[in-house]
Image (tube, rainbow, N blue to C red; front, side, top):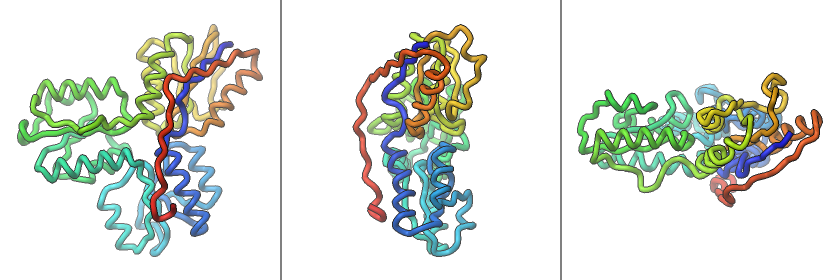
Length: 306
């Protein structure tokens, strides 16, 4: 068995920052520290932080008054900040700076009176937080087909922003459709899809055709992880999204000689190494790491816990 291990893979700077926020808050304030929604979309990360004393909640109203509360990497709406303020909660904001950039764009476009098309996944934590920045201005679009029937108040007073973890190719198709229908639509100064999402997708695009099977380590709730498997399938390669090695099914491996292994941006690399170990214990393996681009991005911790 030959295993090509894609690089970059695993934790992006925003995820690393969010996890450190929880760990630092627990160290400084002690347990419990409350976290609104999952800090990142990975069950292993959430379970490990729970064991250290983090309490994950879906509703701020359930958090005791005066407690410490973290907002997840996906960001929240201004309404959540107001809710936390009413309960006298001490907030640590672990929102990824690249998500904050999209929030800023939404508020900036809204202040100028634009209608805003948000290209995103319906119901995703990040999308919910972004829509809350200017709910009276934002229209959610999830597919290229929706653009055909899209109606806006003023086609000449229109802009778009995007979720940071979308498929680069699918998002571009929607953007192209928007520009074709609304030639004067304003765009963000810089692409909203984050560097980590772009790099991991580029690696799958570049390497998938060399293998018989693609395995993506990541959570089913992780949008960026799911995109990697979807990209591989779009290129005609069987692909599976697995939380760790225990999810691998022997039936997938029939007649497979070469595997591409990668992981989403919310995955600790120890789970990728666990997959490699699974195959090495099963049969002799040649493991080759392929680095397509070097990542050296780092985000500072919030001043509240730095």
